Length: 226
Image (cartoon, rainbow, N blue to C red):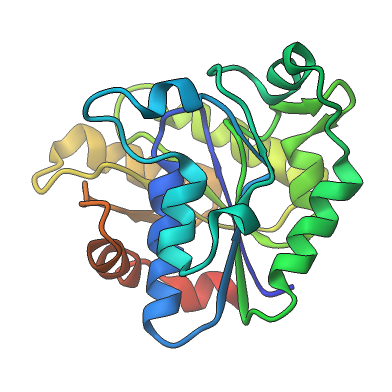
């Protein structure tokens, strides 16, 4: 499959926005885009005032697909997938997740897959997000915060990815301010050098499809996809 797998250094770092921006940008240039996320948790929080849409709905809007094709498994509490499934009495079947991703990508020219939390988050007691990414075989995009602590978190994620055999396509630091200043610029340069990786940035963006597409078009997508 041709496409990208978007992971994060932690939860809440903006990986859904980055994944949606990539999907929207690819779609805007005429690609047939499929988007998948194995599990969505935290739907309890989606109805709160000012909350963004659930991850699978934002990805679906960006790719122009049905949310049901993005994610089949959704859970209300904001928990790790393995625990959310356990509490709900649901068995997560890794083979079914991979089959669903391949089915979604069958008629697409590019697949944008998003993980849950970081690479080592368990989907089941013995199957991690990293295992899911390996089976899909896509280039990996790591989303990270730009501020203090990001060097360690990002380099650890890159090390965990490469140790397993994942191809790291790039890193995105977000939300990147208009005037980042020396500390953030230093973080970017340090991750680039020590991580031996292409580090892009993404500013805060509105969540409508047009704004996402414009933001995604500023990322080096062709290089990452090659």
